[in-house]
Image (tube, rainbow, N blue to C red; front, top):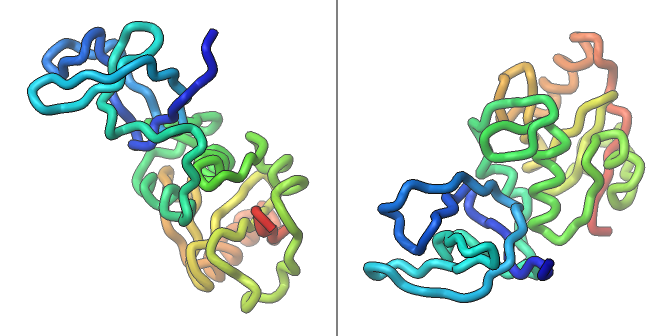
Length: 193
């Protein structure tokens, strides 16, 4: 098996049996999927990446595996409206830790799959009793949940409350989650430090 050369950067892309979008697709690949590109070709002005298994995807939906997104929070923001799915890890449905893992991966941060492991391993601990310490890209944890800080007042998370990836005011979310019985914030971490 050849090592992956590229990853899907679009939220999702079709995989075709040949380099032609007029053929019925073989299926979908979601953001973060790893592929091995064996070549390129053009059909009617559109460039396709030819994969090692003989299938083809639109080349502009891929980036080299070593590509690092400067603003990986923006990657998470592309998922707004995606349905919440416990255990899901694709653009068709995902949970809180998958959203964080996929976005962080695009930013060059290798985080584990589950929120408890992310809480234990993601970067540096930051005191979570100081709202002024919040920075874009920080992670807030609760028992069994994680959210990504967008700015000092806003977070983004895949959550069962909205049943989707959504923005939420941080102070309101903290109060709502605690009142709902899931307790207070358990950690504030800063990946990449």
